[in-house]
Length: 312
Image (cartoon, rainbow, N blue to C red; front, side, top):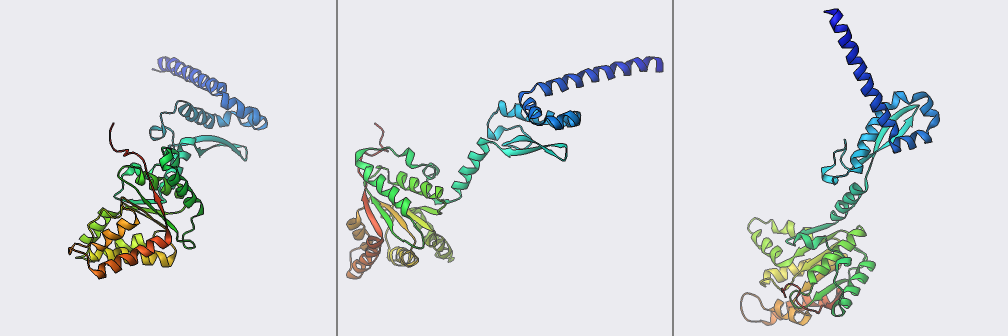
């Protein structure tokens, strides 16, 4: 058997040697590998052969990057990371650093961590002022919102905004842009669709869970209450929820932004009309007390324009 096996083994060794030599040539022809060798000539003279495995890994991982299928389909050893060569005590090492797609995704996730939302469409938590459709009827609101973002200081300045206008003029869109602008400044914002949140609080009365939910939004550095006035009004909502919420935020100097289809006068009427029917003097006084807090701390903005929800 040996006379037969010996030439077979020699043939296999020759073929392996040919493949290794071809692989070595492919590695050394790579432009990035060549650039590294030129920058590290002294190391290469003595250690090039010992570092071929690392050079091969470096070359193949960069090949994946050059034909990038996208971050979430990344085939590299560590998704979203590009290889980098380093010489440590004459030993070649492959390290990794995040690519531009990974850094962009990390930034998006970091920014999203500064925005919490309840019952708000997801797309409204990603809009920015760059997405805002500029038209003359809405520019005052746009400018005032930007000024609000630039001067905000939760805990020091509790001034907020009261944005009102008819259906579909872009009120929720605008407060979504505010939330993202504040996220860029690393200011945490809670964005809440008011009617649904109040319904959830009511459902938690029986087990007492509503208090924890209320405390969560009470303490938000910046609170955005979207569509206030669209809820069914009751004494409990007005006095125990809105009243205590606004009182706490006023005392702690925490900015609150409101959107509504009602102007301030109309909202006061809404707050005075509870589900008991009719309007009593005590309800008018309690509604006025809440409105005084809103007026004192919030700049009123009227948004005008066409209903963007209507199809042409």
